[in-house]
Image (cartoon, rainbow over all chains, first blue to last red; front, side, top):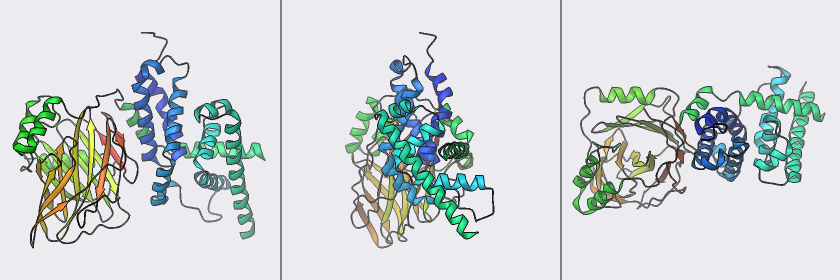
Length: 172
Length: 281
């Protein structure tokens, strides 16, 4: 055995945290995210003899996770409609909390409303801080597509924040 | 503006990601992900279960007890009286930790040899828990509306799970007000008697046989209800698949809940309209 390469258990221990938090941000629901991570790791385990030789096994796992999440997006969206209350915190009344919290809240609501690919690109780019080339690799698309997808997502988030701020200005 | 926005997006994402419970990550990290065999039963059990189609339920018992390693040794096609402490032990195992059971009252417990299968439910949510000598598996489902079958009918949800290459299936659901007994007939002819009470029934069996029909004892006589259950999501290795049916008026699948999940030594999860939480001990 090549001792420079991680064994699967070490890989799981090192990558589960990141995969789970990424999955949660993409699908917006804990049980769905857990499912996604579990299915991802099952697939990685089945191919571990090849994956362990890769330079970045976690990038491979991330690609599986992202593609599975996007494949399942329609089904998960259906479920979120039934469990809307579980997805995001209730909206806070005006003036009852800090601006930072309100901003997070609105951003997260806007993020949840993004098309799945845009949401995924935003999560990969701004949560994992992946370079655009790795976002493209994870989403199995061209660099240009990854850039434009993230940019469109960011623009929507900005628009959502602007609308919220305008509403807040009018109401105060 | 863009830099500020990007900073706020990063902060919001981190705050949101921080909401993931550490227990959830720990549970995922403890799971045994190593590939398992695709067959749900060892060949011995396959042959015996096929024979059960003509020989009846006794053949099932023989096949299961013949394999010393079977996770389901001791299962019986009819419910058995619980051993002293069996129900309390199962309840403690099922209700411990984070699970879909939380907050749901216990409706029914089915015991077959060393196994206890419990149903927890309210009007729109249900959760099941099977406790065996070496494992506990919990899963839950949610309905959009309360389920109220006609007096002489049942409405069921059926699932199939595999664990380390050995599978089992179960059916649980509501009974009409006039139903006092339920015996399921599987597609290989095996009969499995359900435990019935409080407007609920539950039965389970080793293997992946689908339910073909149910013979019901009702206040107006015997009724046979037929089903046409097919998994809504293709069932894959070491996952849980489910079929549901309102089955009123002769059957046909109707969505109430669906699930696909891994099933592993450390924990597990569900999706679709089903939330689940599996763990083995």
